[in-house]
Length: 413
Image (cartoon, one colour):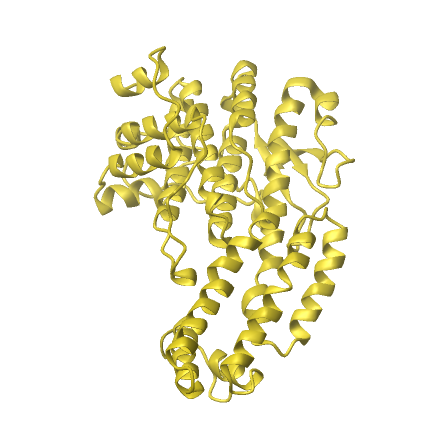
């Protein structure tokens, strides 16, 4: 363990009133600059089931200073504010999100090394730090940040399940305490207002400015709106079939060729956000029924902004519910390991009533652990998580390829 890493875990006090985002920005700065060869060595192969070589440990240790800041951010007593200016609307850059996901990917590898080398507490702290960052990454509230949160949560859940045989009962208790300590997750149901601000209000402001600048020339106003919408539709309207109308053509036609008509289309679209938010907060079952009706209305609408703003939400909510099921299965798996069937029943599936289904998992006839399965299967398969209790050939632990064998590392050791 490096001296810096040891100090962070010691009794030395450090400030807890610093905006976590500042800690994370510092972490990004402190991230090691690996060569492409080293990055490929770490991240472009599957290390599960392998005795990790010394080169692997040396490379992941270069992230120590970065993770000092990630761990410190967990202890913050103030909200996370990334300082992102949403004024550019849909063109707002959020460069921190890719870095956030990268930290989760690094945390998974560092945990593998720490667990293999007898430092499970360090592995747990890195995973908890990554999970706290996942939650804080969604604080901007826009859809892309929520999807990054989900991706990071999935990475952490998989890392726990695939290394489960390394966790002692005491370490599992530490892990539970860490799971309890992280911030609440951002939700799809809470992001609607930010999406309105990101697009509807942004475009509305620009139209109002164009109308003020051209009080008696609506053709000029429409030309300005066209520039904005064409930019949204992508350069050179990529992907459009010859007979397919562009977004601008559909908007202009539906608006009757006037800027006032475009404003009415925006107002009509924005009026659907409260309904969407209500649906996004429904439990499974009720959600599926109501979102099906909502999607039918979107498809039937002649307002082009409806499909632009609402078409992706159902798939995103499915990913969110799958992630929530995964997080619950991690809890249930720990309870099952510590307390057996009684522990398993303490954590319910997404219906809030039933426990997860549990069964032994065999790979090529060998018992490798246990699998929890959710009743939720809106993505086309039952969501499940396999907890590896015995070392051996690697396999997928979650998703539609759970239980399938994974390739062994091919890079030099």
